[in-house]
Length: 111
Length: 118
Image (cartoon, rainbow over all chains, first blue to last red; front, side, top):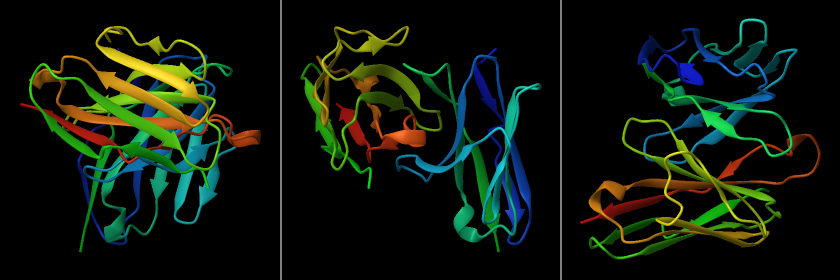
């Protein structure tokens, strides 16, 4: 079983739709979690960190469920510019941490 | 703030040559730098983690004699692909971490280097 798993998609949604992605991780000692966005042939860019209490940034909401070992990303009111690959990143224990990337979920928002 | 640059952005070389890629943190001191490789339609695969002044820690399956990493200062790490072969063609991305406070483990990525070995 892979350490970090994501549904590769693609998720094909119309503008204005709400879409949610999940990411599961296998290492219960994982300490910190992030969502990154990667556009085609570009480097990943941090979208948001994921906190235990959940956090929201505009149209984006991230949740962490430690008991079930998954994180989620909810995008409301999708825009065409949201089309990208969304990567979840899980870091193991703090100190000298080891980041593990999921393979990404592709989102296509169409008019 | 927290800008990371990579050089070169792309390189084409002949099989058997060595290629050096530089990763620099421009406005912060990066205590840790990471090197990743990404093949088309694949996820980023961590190759190695390097801390300034220490030997890099390589992930399983990554040949340390082939992928030489030097992290000589808090703002510069280099990856040298020695005796490159066509199968080494990939997108190589570095990231740096080291901000103070709650963002200490946030990674900032360089723009990547696209390597094509003929």
